[in-house]
Picture 1: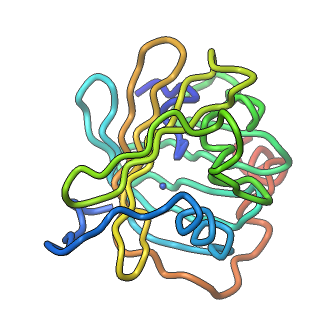
Picture 2: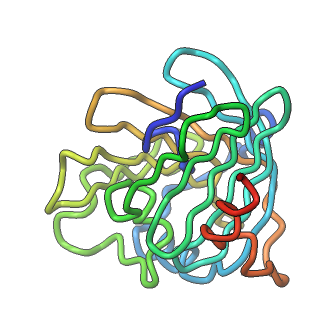
Length: 200
């Protein structure tokens, strides 16, 4: 499988998590507050790729600016985000790893040091689909990088999935299982240089 910046989180499992029937629309302030409090998290994810193929694995998040996607076999891909860079390793390929500036991926919005979805021009959509709040956001200065659609449920507020639409027209959906929040995640998980050394 070939990954692009849209196939990240890279990018946040199992099947869609249960959604309460009495869900209500969340405000942008509530969602921003939730993301800012989300410091470390670990959980399972399922990724639906643009070609319809499905991958799964474990995601690690350490805000700000760090994440890791470990894909389950038979996939041999590892995605590491750190030092403002997204690096994609394919262990079965003889080709060098692919890397992209984090700022050029819509997921930089989630991993930002300070999330403020109410900031002018960032949010291009804020709606309620009957079960969850869907926020569409993009870098207003660089709309060619694509956008991200984030789906949140309430009571308590939880990030359930995201859809990344890249500038080339590809779409990737990541569905999250229950995230284990808090705890210590070692920085080596997000050390791009260390993973590169392991890959050689």
